[in-house]
Image (cartoon, rainbow, N blue to C red):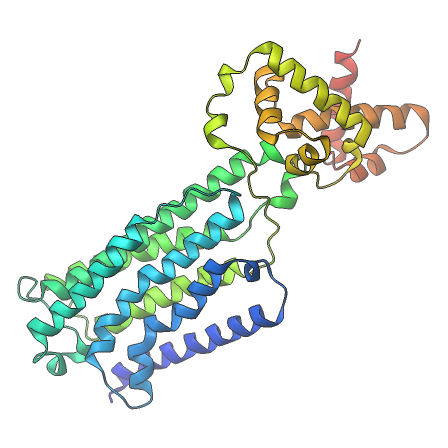
Length: 360
């Protein structure tokens, strides 16, 4: 084999070694991803993307593997998608139709490729044609569908993460403890890579980019990007799945003031009895379960009655407690702010002064 052909094959081998290291890490360590079936579906199906290149690396050659490797994308993306939704929402609303329709459709296109171009496969470098989009439409269409499915799911991942982080103050007090780091950047990288891969396929199809072994590089692009996503998912995140009934949340303005005040009265009594303001890492789900109340009802009541969220609600009690501690002892402001997670000294000082002024 030529050096030009061996470079992508060696790259496939290197990515596989990284995948094995990631698999070993997940298997041996108690990371968050071990609790999600979607993660295992994704990580175990990942080698299928490079099955053709790995087979060539050991001396084999299979045009069927080269054609069918792209069809593994829907399975892998479905696993990543299910994993993320399980991290973010207790009752996720999954949109699975793209996987159920595109997956079988791509397998049909692979069969069409074999039927139309089986005799040409061995003559193509890297088992992929160059140019002639009308003749080899099935090959290019398969790759374009894979790229656009990847693009669509990556955008969905970003939207889900943005919604989760936007809603964190509604359900947790110390939001920084529950941030999911790294995944947004990895999803953004996936969006860029998917877009580039779609452009490359189109450029090759119309003869603007005579890239030899382009299908191998296409497989490598998909494998690298999904491996980055899997590496980020395998980190020991501390997510707080949303406890809300989002259909009920959309009806927040309909809650009457009398109902909201009744719920808030119970919630305020529970805060005092539980001394919830002292608990670092408190979530609305934990608080509501102890109080024997609905998390959605508390959130709706806070929005309707106090025009605030759970974080702001508990912070009011933390500020009152901080005032009592500071006024009744010589405790320094820094130690109180650190213990109650009230932020940096300057922020806490300004908040505390505003609070005192409002009480005059």
